Amino acid sequence: MAVGQRFERGVNVTGAAEAVRESEATTVEPLSQEDVALSHMAAEPDLLVRLENVTVRYGKGPSATEALSPTTLSVPKGDFIALVGPSGCGKSTLLKLASELLSPTSGQIVFPECRHGEASIKVGMAFQSSTLLPWLTIRDNVMLPLKIVRPFRQHYRAKRKGEFRDRVDALLEQVGLLDFADKNPWQLSGGMMQRANLCRALVHEPDLLLLDEPFGALDQFTREELWSTLQDLWLARKATVLLVTHDLREAGYLANRICVMSARPGRILEDRTIAFRRPREIDITFSSDFVTLIQDLRGLIMHQPRGLNDDD
Image: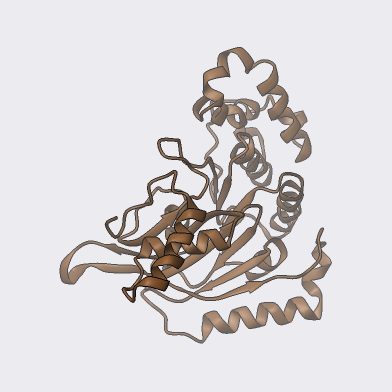
């Protein structure tokens, strides 16, 4: 397989790992990137996706920009991972790679449960701007993925006024928006629109939820309220989450793991496990252990060479 291409789906991971072990016993030839990645997959059976030594370079020749240096990231099912680091370090690039919106310049992206010829994993996304369609009601905005994403779209006409409406309303009720289901986005506050945005990202039960600074444009009090909302949604649904944020308190409150990235070309400097018990209350952010965590993370980010001040 050429470097930079994704694995063909349907690879027998266990069998591949056995083949790797046999090759190790009978030859001294170096393992290919594919063999290495597959052996890691066999050792991590609950993995949703693994990025193996991926790099990203934009452009060609002397003017090319190396956005991401060789980076490996394993994302188990049900995990909540926050990516933090200076602007331009490649955090959003990792989200694009994990969702297949971007192909790596080199390295491998592996989805162990996607069979050959089948569709990729389902992905939900929420960004700093809610991007709700102003001419649709909140209910219809949240229902939109069910009209677009397989396998729901095949049944949209038959179920949109029954099962799908009930699915949307259950989500809206969970985030306190059911009474606003028939309103338009312009009739809601910024925090309410972001709650609807989260519902839309989750309504089709994605395998992977990608959040890119979803609360960055909100005031501190609204942001902290939505941290609790997102935690409740995650505890109820156990979606696999990748969160990009510049807010270290947000990362510490929400995530199971925090990956600290270097300045461009980005790479993961540290993959820190966050052991605070759940459900977490906002008061935990004032505890000595939490403050120490934030200071450690800040030190890792600040005490490194900075790249150009590009947005990420």
